Image 1 (cartoon, rainbow over the protein chains, first blue to last red):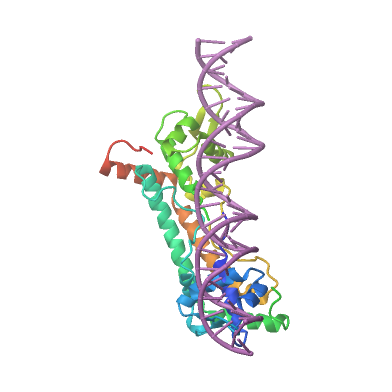
Image 2 (image 1 turned 180 degrees about the vertical axis):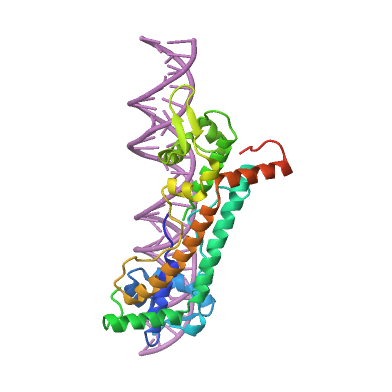
Length: 149
Length: 149
DNA sequence: CTTAATGTAATACTGTTTGTTACATGAAAA
DNA sequence: TTTTCATGTAACAAACAGTATTACATTAAG
């Protein structure tokens, strides 16, 4: 299975935007992230709908953070991305006729739901401000420019 | 990402084998599971290496359970399958040079590791005998043949 | 009007599971 | 011994989802 790195990627983008003054173009963000500007636009489009960022077209336009970093959790970002599928594993059939499979599914769903609940709780525990703080602390310990990629 | 249903599938197969006398061919199991015999052989091969099933070639051959259902947990089966990837989401880069991405990864890894730990704990809590018992209880409540698929 | 930017559709690329075909190997049965 | 039935395995096709790229329309500043 190919792993979905949108949450990881968009968090990276948002923290970089938090370090920048004014609007940033998707071209610039794509450079930082080593990807394509269209990918950036597609991803940030979801966040815009949730009011986390704004975009301005035309000359001098670009993207801007418009939220309180301390008020937005990783779970909010996850939701803004459309709540992507969490697990790479799942049931063969969701509504099986077979009673054996029903018994299997019941136990599997129980386990996966509990794990997902823990994951969501952890994502709700962390704000963008937490990430930013950790980044700045790491910065003090290590070097002076915050990114090459 | 395409969802991996091997764990779900192999549990289904094992419970069916538990209901059958003698050796069962991969052809027959494929019929029950509505898939291809080769898929069955591929999947059960991992379990055979762990000593959970045996296979016999040639005329009259087939597959046989050779473990104590009460002693084998879903986690054992998960391991026998080669511990497939759990999450459909992951970090963009595992060893980033960017400090922003390091901060993001640190929090993401923490959340995902906790969720994975819960999942594994749940899988360790359930034995094949538990599944079999639940199936038989469902059987009493519902009908008399245990599967059509 | 030109330039610079987003918005978006269409398409290709990539990696993983699943499905299929083909054939070699082994063992029981005729 | 030959036939038949089964596993073992390699090779390859199909399906699927995230990612990347191209192309072009739209919008706004200079």
